[in-house]
Image 1: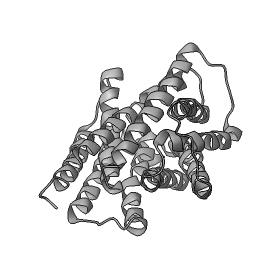
Image 2: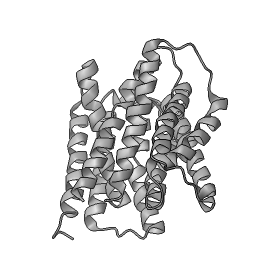
Image 3: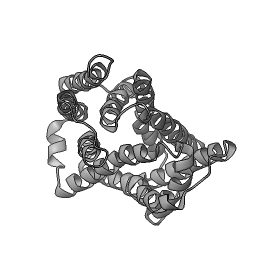
Length: 289
């Protein structure tokens, strides 16, 4: 089980680079929806190459409908709704609502996967939701963020959190039959194509291509590859709570890259997230069940 946590933490570290790399692309004049499109399209090349080289290209016809649903919700709706949430309410509020995902995962894992909900899981869930709120609002002025609180920002943010949670549920469902390259070989092109009508393409500098390629290779291909390996060892709720290390890691990267720092609220939130992950690790150790 410890190995599973290490894989999920490594994936979260790579996801923590999404913000900095996206900012690089934005600074080069690339619009958010185009960034989302190229992230999916370029990642498909990496996953597709991996799948073909390893001979992992099989597809069972009975899985086609669920893979299509996963592609539309997990790529098109997820990428699109998150960008719209950022646009409507700002990055901090969008992050808070995105990381309602562990709560969505806990509910769906209980309903569909019959996962047992222990007091430790519920306590960790409460800690992580409070911690993410602290980290997200601890990077800027809370009053400014409250002024941008709109009904649509909440709707798009909750949709992004729900769609993000589906990666854990669908991932667990497919993990016994498909590797991540095999699954994403079919999922990403559907998501990229359905994003296409929302994209306005612009000229891209070499720096923009570097940022987009790193987003695809590091934050999508490498991270999801490790994440799906981790899911083989962990229950979805444990994995979802552990992955909330992402905003903490993103904050550390922002500190060293741009000199940004948390307010006291952000540091408290970081501590709560770390405590929730530690609680999951301890509760899942041999002799603690």
